Image 1 (cartoon, rainbow, N blue to C red):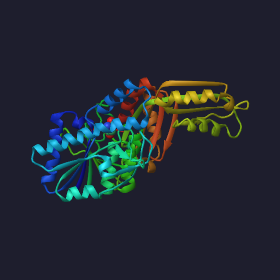
Image 2 (cartoon, helix red, strand yellow):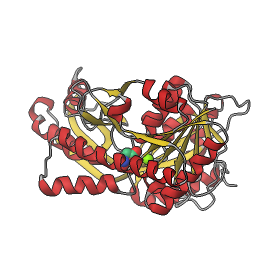
Image 3 (cartoon, helix red, strand yellow):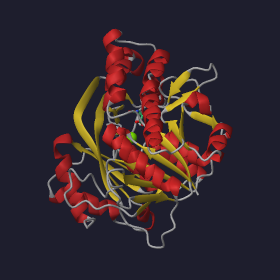
Image 4 (spheres, rainbow, N blue to C red):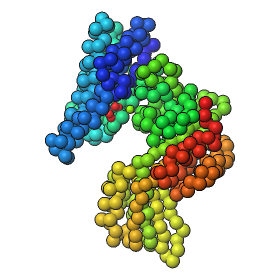
Length: 402
Ligand code: ASP
Ligand code: MG
């Protein structure tokens, strides 16, 4: 078997954990498998490097920032190869340039385009464990790029796809994917399996277990993932295409507090206004999520929408700068909101799921600001202070507990 194993920052945070990960990989190797290991930077090293950069220059060039950040992963792969050597196991570390993991040129948010597999194959054929830097790539200028925060998951999935691996295990500091954040919901339960689509929604909606691009890629190339803990031997959660006969109505409840709501009041009720508003935001690189347009009155209408909290200043700036073109009377902004979502492939064939969620919120007297839905998801916008209460009430309502 060819096994790709990815370990996140907490799993390689110190010497003891690095040794522990080394042993775990060696076990698979000694059973006769080909083992490819993908690592993140140790602990919070990426944050440390970002702080160092900002301390020298508050607005560092993206190219130089990637050059700097890529050293975090390079440190962990080299140390891991040294750790394995202490057990007399042949191992070799490779960075993105040595493998040749080709990406687009966008520093800080590059996308993987192609991975050369010759070098990796060659090392595996020599019966070595191959340890590869996550999160980084190389662009057409031969510069180092990074894939965006959390990008090591994507590196692992891309490698699993390129090498036609038999399995891709993502090791993290939690046991798997839960029905809700166990820190908020005491009764949260670990899922045995979940579909790509459900996982994609959960990843995007704030269940920070997997990088959402990694799930997109796993679905596209049919790479089956296992999410499990590096700190114990628990089985974890399998992420795959749906093969279950009986789909769960709801697989999980997720909360995202990184949300801001913006309302434009008194816009002209004529064609082209929505286009202008969202064009301005698009050009400012702001991702818009939920959108609500009120029914026109006296020739005016209101448009309300949400943006990621960390993009709210960019959104605000762009809208204020274009006030005359857009012609709104008033702009209001609320940062004290959060999105709570339920996700489940079974929703597609079962009516009444949304009503049940709303009933849970009503029973707890929680007011809903906005609603949006997709085939397998219902999202509500509520007051950020009520998130914990809401998530628990919904979790209880759908009886997702152990
Ligand atoms: N080290 C990078 C980060 O912290 C990539 C990763 O851990 O996946 O974002
Ligand atoms: Mg991560």
